[in-house]
Length: 289
Length: 308
Ligand SMILES: Nc1nc2c(ncn2[C@@H]2O[C@H](COP(=O)(O)OP(=O)(O)OP(=O)(O)O)[C@@H](O)[C@H]2O)c(=O)[nH]1
Ligand SMILES: Nc1nc2c(ncn2[C@@H]2O[C@H](COP(=O)(O)OP(=O)(O)OP(=O)(O)O)[C@@H](O)[C@H]2O)c(=O)[nH]1
Ligand SMILES: [Mg+2]
Ligand SMILES: [Mg+2]
Image (spheres, rainbow over the protein chains, first blue to last red):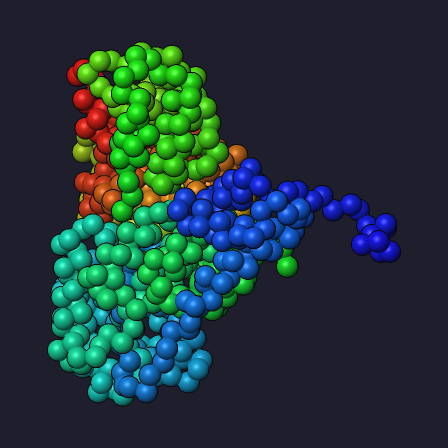
């Protein structure tokens, strides 16, 4: 105010009106939040504030707070259980970052003192096994493999047996990328789950769906179908080191409420971070801190 | 999951069924719904905005054919404009692969489908045009990326440049060029590592590869499920590396494919192919009409109005 305000540059304040709300909505839409959710967020934010004069920073702050509020409930690291082996199945559409994320997670769990085993369940894509083997080496974790073209469910079964014998804490199973509208491939995934459950009815203990941050509204469909057919227990969003903001996560939190365990922020082994609602919200609305 | 455009418009136009021509206000109301439909189909906001503006001018004052509703009429106008933008003014023709060995450079974000598309196109050129193709992986970054291309090469019966560990992408590009000339190949394809459009270092590296190879075609491979970020990606890759065409992958999914419009509108470059699966035959030439119907989620209405 009055005493200190003079040296500072005047802060432009604008009235929070319909025009302004529409602009804010658009900001959220360009972050892939989707029209419905963007409308909801701006409406909540405007409640009781219409007609007020606010600075750009204040508005962004409010919007970030609103998003943080929605996301707070879903920010949860992947739970670890005493049960051995804890089976972690990793699923998702093609190229979303499943294999890379397994490498990063394996490295983190290993560093936390866990005995980890990886199963190369993508027996379809060319050199998928070789790729995972490199990640296994990097993380210092053994990788169980089967020949290209073999049945991923039987590999998963063998891997369960091996992990049990070896007394592993964690068994992470990579799977081939599949689009959720391919019912044959989704059935293949259900079969993997069924076979795993023959060895342990409570497994897989975690089924992680890996989403690519550049994906738009189709992510909603991905979560819906993968949850129905593979019992997804948590999400990881990769490629948040680009310019995509991953705003669809807000819509997902709203609709499905699945926990978000981690985010991928690069191609290196340490480029996996916990999901932080406040950082995420700030980045989404373009607030520098 | 989303309402398609006809559902959105039916409510809006219920009260207007008697009118003979579309008034400015009718069109405005309808276009608000069109804008939402486009955004839900992942068309980038600035592109959707320009699009709506263009349609506004075209639609106002148009007479409504008797046998269709104003809503259906608007859909048809929107569809035609979509198709018009997706098609562009010039026929892109075939890939430029004259003057053997013709280099084709493949670029794009991580995981967009470059390696798979490289092999699919190589197979196509070999089988449909009888070309001798050499594929080279310049991906020194992602684990087993070179092996991936080599395996695909064996699968489709196309040669790959032997892998030499420790070589950088520019050196590999030079070796590919030499090998392609000496070996009498018609085309050589350079598959590159995935890179973010904002990664200055890797973008500079791709530009260096381009300067060595002087590609006849530089294809930007983009995931058809891409959302709003499509504009940033297209703009940066085109500015920094220069693209001659776009390939949209994963169009076998149930995404609406709005990225197609974003890419086309932002770069002005033709979309050459769409990827329709993981198999080596799963690639087709781009059909503007089909994608236009898909973005709007309503091929049927368009057919109805065309018949009326
Ligand atoms: N920039 C960036 N790239 C990533 C990230 N996570 C993965 N990638 C890259 O994305 C590409 C695809 O990653 P993969 O781990 O092979 O994806 P995938 O889901 O296993 O792919 P498929 O098995 O073919 O379905 C690779 O080039 C990775 O290096 C991330 O967080 N940021
Ligand atoms: N369903 C479907 N999958 C595709 C299509 N094109 C590629 N893929 C899959 O997408 C994944 C990634 O493809 P790649 O060709 O490895 O992608 P890339 O761009 O070379 O990836 P990086 O080299 O890691 O940047 C693989 O699982 C492919 O099988 C397509 O049109 N449809
Ligand atoms: Mg993989
Ligand atoms: Mg590749």
